[in-house]
Amino acid sequence: MCETQPLQPPSPGALVVDTSRGDRVGEFRGVAGPYWALRPVRGGAEWEAEPRYVRPAEPMERMRAENARRNARSAKGLL
Image (tube, rainbow, N blue to C red; front, side, top):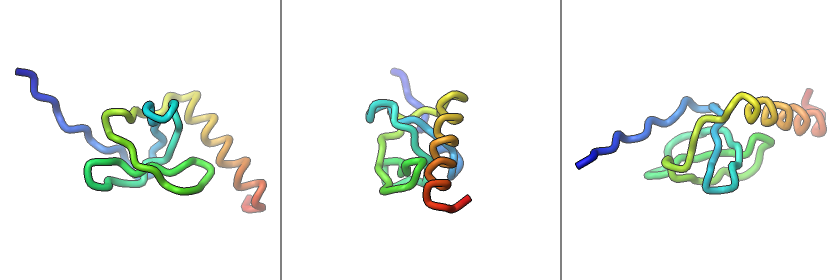
């Protein structure tokens, strides 16, 4: 019988990908019961994801997400 190890949550603020939502990139916010709370990189409402569908963002995904975040902040005059 194969026993699975519980998934360790990433550090708050880490960029991750929710594969159950079309590889949506989000910022890890914390644990909400059995789910992980993620927030869109540009801001907005958090969503919950099952940890088994979440993976660390790859370098290109992180770069695109950081660029989107900067563009959103710039559009709001926050730079």
